[in-house]
Length: 67
Image 1 (cartoon, rainbow, N blue to C red):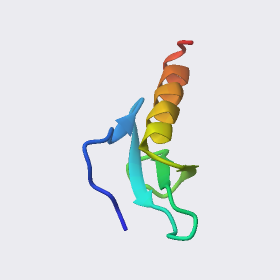
Image 2: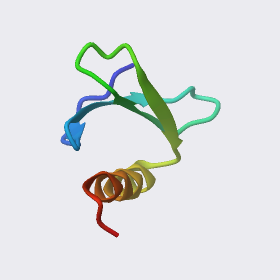
Image 3: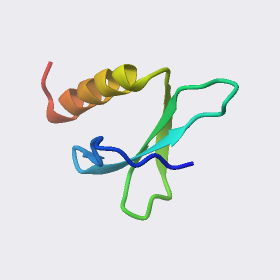
């Protein structure tokens, strides 16, 4: 199930999707796509929204070349 909330839809120009993880494992799956066709990307499992936010902040900083 796709989640639609006020979360970043892009990071450094790359589109992002959020999905609820399997009910057994819980948490949120964050998918960062390499292009608009959304046919290639990587998925990160986060335990909660706080973890997802911290992760996306760090990825954004790395993509911009900041520490």
